[in-house]
Amino acid sequence: MLKPVPIAYFLGILGIITALKLQYDLALDYAELTGKERALFGLRHLDLLPWAGLGVLTILLAGLGRLGGAPWKALWIPILLGVVQILLVFLELWRLG
View 1: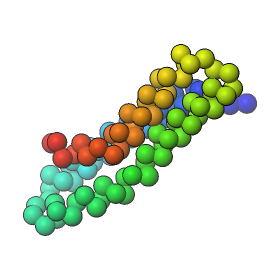
View 2: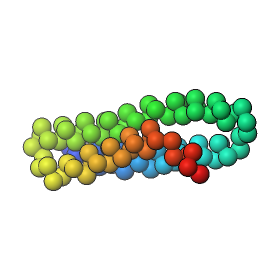
View 3: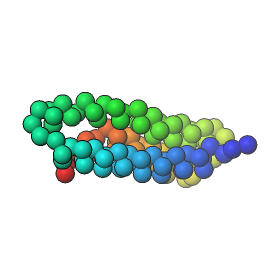
């Protein structure tokens, strides 16, 4: 049977890499736009919000690991990875560049 904690670690790291890549792509697209196109660019960010589900899934798998008897020391890292990934998706980092 698959263990949820190692899967949560993997999904957490994969989620952070994916969120950073999506933010980088948004920054490149935003740099090419001017005027009215930039005003409506925030709507494109709405397409990325479902990627936050990967962070939620990471946190849920860590919770399942706790139900399976995993110690808290093994769970705080995937929970932290999930929270960071959710923040990276919701924060508009592409506006900082």
